[in-house]
Image (cartoon, rainbow, N blue to C red; front, side):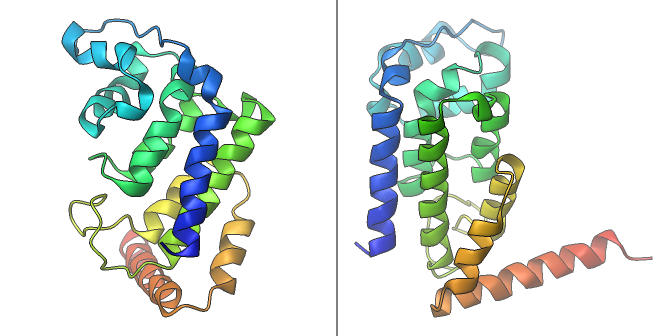
Length: 196
C-alpha cells in the first residue's frame, strides 16, 4: 500500500472514531412514497460498517425525502469508506454535496476536521493515480476524475488553496498527467459555454 493510500485508510478509520456516537444512534428515517419498509430496514438495523453500496444508495438517492440532516453523520464514515475503496454507483460529487444538506459547518470541530482530513487524503490518492487506472467510481471512464473531486470539494469546502497547493507540490507523472487532463477538460468546457 502506498503512503497516500495508507493515509487515506487512516483518515477513514478516524472518521469511524470521531463519528462513533452518531453511528450508535439509530437514524429516524421517515417513510416516503418512493421507498418500501424493506428498503429502509437495513439502514436502521444493520451495523454501519456492513452496509452495502446498494443499501446506502437508498439513503443517498432519497436523503432529502426521508432523512434529517443529522442522519448523514450516522452514515458518513461508511459513505466515505465506500467512495474511497469500493463503488457506490453514485457520483462522488453527489455524495459529498450531502454535507451542505447536513449543515456540516455546524458539526463539532472534530467532525469537521476528520472530514477535511479525509478529503485531503483522498485528494492526494486521486492526484497520484493514473487517470485511466480502473476504478469503480465512474462508470463511464472507470475513475473518479480529479475534476469531480475538486468540484465536490469546492461545493462544500470554503478554501481550496490547500488542495491546490498539494497539487502544485506533487512531482509524480500521474499528478502532472491529471493536471493536463483537468486543464484540457475545463478549457473544452469553457469554450463550449462561452462560444459566440
